[in-house]
Length: 87
Ligand SMILES: [Zn+2]
Image 1 (cartoon, protein in one colour):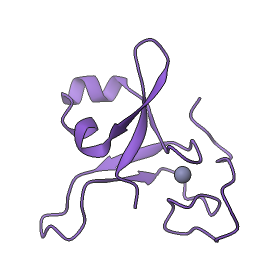
Image 2 (tube, protein in one colour; image 1 turned 90 degrees about the vertical axis):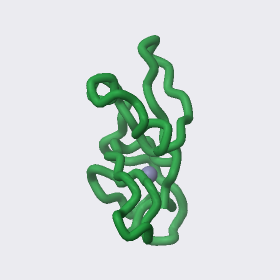
Image 3 (cartoon, protein in one colour; image 1 turned 30 degrees about the vertical axis):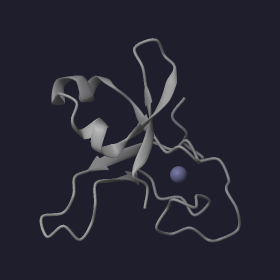
Image 4 (spheres, rainbow, N blue to C red; image 1 turned 180 degrees about the vertical axis):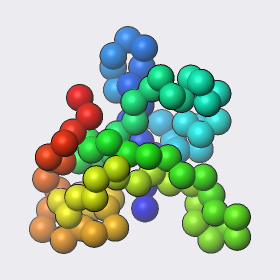
């Protein structure tokens, strides 16, 4: 499960950030930013820790991708770039 992501800065440069830090941004700021998987570069959405605490805050691919080790449907055949990457 991915607990860190790339976030696109206002200067257009992608930088690593933990999901927790990303979730602590003001919602208005967060809406204007793009987030992507650090491995396959696919778009991700951010999810808070589950109420029962079982799942920590994490990122999920918007479009599931079998070619990413961070995906819940990874096929174990190595990392391949997401077909719909965030650039
Ligand atoms: Zn990925």
